[in-house]
Image (cartoon, rainbow over all chains, first blue to last red; front, side):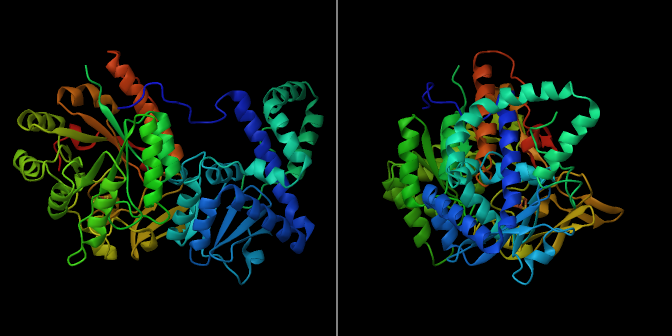
Length: 239
Length: 328
Ligand code: SF4
């Protein structure tokens, strides 16, 4: 029967500082994603193709399964980010960033269309893609909505969830050289540093505080309230 | 006092590792085909995956069971027999079977392979269970979720094989292995194809703030704004009959029998099973960890703690199901 000494560690970032650091890096990655379409279509496609190749190297089992799927497109739409991702599975796998307009990504999606759409807050989608959170539980709580080909979404979810925890933020950072080296240091220190920044922020006069929050929202590409989305703010950067 | 065995689900190799690391005594899984009752896209194990799973689990003194618990199609026994042969070759600790023909094959071909009777066989009375034991040497029966705790206690008093009961997860309120609701709507059932409400027949639609779920073109439920959602299984559909929309059989809800550990122990139950091979590894890690903690506390003679698993459950509600009610 079971070995009583077997490892019992399963979850990650359970400490408050760890959770804050996670929120911070989620916000950073969302802001980074917001910048991708500004590079222009060709450069952004090239960047995302590189990211996909890198992920395929790190997770060969999952990517082989994704390539074996019939050709299909899944739109992953974070409701609080300026950009959605169109992922093509099957032999011609690819990833594209689509800017979200006033009506979501409808126009940018154009004729290509998507066979299925997964929609939810950016942090939840990231947790889901990295296997930190259970997709069904998010769906039951209505934090995640899906439409179109349910079997396609299920196949994608099960394939990605079959990987041991992915670290998309670190993988994305690794295509930006120096950021990859900075990330471990950032992760170690982000929680406590953010606590100190928040404490300092609370001492600022209200107009200055609101100005900083507006700036954060602009950096995150979420100024104002996006369609169907949440008020823009870099997670982890404000109490 | 011997502790319960904790039997945990895995739909992927990562989920298996999560279950083992979180405190499972045994993990049950299925091959990537229609031979098991969770034949979902992207889910389940190749033969090599099972070999790796057995290595990982056995190195940590955890057992691996393979569910081959759908009913073979007439004239096409090959995949089911091969699944049994491969499970034996891969040195799994038990196979979980439902079909008498397949039990007979396994008993004769692999006399050393431990046989468990699947919940899909729906063996809920003394005579049926004795028959499976005497005819095929079945060592454990997984009881269908239609019995009350006193009924389980009476059953255990009269049989001499181990019983395993579900304690957490999605609920089949009907006698398992007998339900054809999914077949009526889609032509596919858990009993033969290994899928209840197959995903390729499911669609979700936003209707304003409401979420509608459909199966095979039939609307199964419309969840109002802010209302917790559930799977589009017909047994948990909300249908218009008489006065207006109502749940006719069961509401979207999940089983959680953690509070019944003392009663289940007194009833002579040997093993507790968590449902959810189709769920993500985060669910498996959280639920297995919670049950492991509850079992350790219970075994130490302390009161079973209340561990919040509300965030994990379908429809946002939990029930002790048939264990504490006489309704069928
Ligand atoms: S319809 Fe309900 S009772 Fe029937 S097999 Fe599906 S989940 Fe079980």
